Length: 171
Image (cartoon, rainbow, N blue to C red):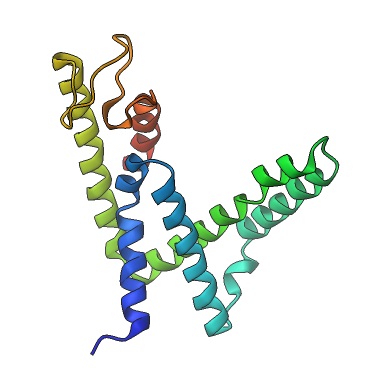
């Protein structure tokens, strides 16, 4: 019988592996995955009472940086707006810790993440080429601006920036 903890770990393993595809879908799913992986990491570490990761220099630096930018938000012209843009950085720190935890526990995640990233990269390149030559992409989104390709991103012209940021991860 599969335990609930094992099932939850498989879910979070799946979220990390599919993260490149989630990024294509828009901002909601990757942010949700980021928060869930961070919460999973916190729950595991609190349950195991193991806080050794928090003693690493890079994590200490990130926590101090997070505290620094939030302290500066206190003195901004509009603290509410400032805090609303700085507080969410905590989810990134927790996402990195959760991802590192799962990658260290499951060595196959690196390979599966690479292959899915490569797949999503080639799908975007193929779709953008198809859109360039036919005027529509594979799911029927029309090319509205002849000088820029949007691929699956629709009205947002972020395809080039997405591909250029995914390429270093692939390499």
